[in-house]
Amino acid sequence: MKKMKRIALVTFFTLIAAVSFSQEQAAKKYELGANIGMTTFTNYPALSLFQDAADCYANWSGAVHFGFRKKNMLYGLHTHMSYFNTSAIELDEWSSQTTWALMARRYDRIGENFETVFGLKIGLSVMSNSFSYIGKDYNRTRVGTYGEVETGVNYVLESGNYFGIRFAIDMGLNRSKDVSLPVGLVGNDKRFFGGYILSIQYGLRF
Image (cartoon, rainbow, N blue to C red; front, side, top):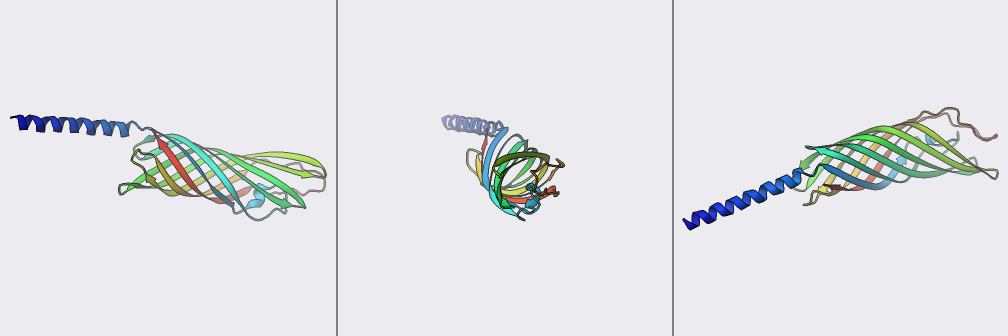
């Protein structure tokens, strides 16, 4: 009889622990992540103000996202920033791109500790260009649309947090027209740009 009671008690507390663990995992409805990596543009002239800018360029980029989880899906907001510079017409031009996008991402578990990632983003792109010419500083801002397709793989820790690697293809369109430049500089009429992003990422789930 005592043995039966012990078995019953052990079974009961085991079930309680299992339910508590399940509820703890299910309660992790949110995700906060950050990544840093390299961005390579395949049509750099569209990001420059000058007609004879370099054809492509690579530099660092970083991003942060926050969203809520529903089963194996994540829905949220994503912001991304990258910096780059080039020399054109014997002057240096510094540029930055900041994007704000809605994101949807799918996670599929592989084995015990790995999961694949596939995601889509669409939103707003803001390009800021700065340069000096004949002793004067100039700044221009161009607004456009932005889209991104990403894939990757995560290693999931026991806590549910993860770190992983990402590969993404991004594309955008600068919609601002007729950017005024100093006399003697020829403007760039290319507006479409695209590129690749390779980065590492860490995410918190809570």
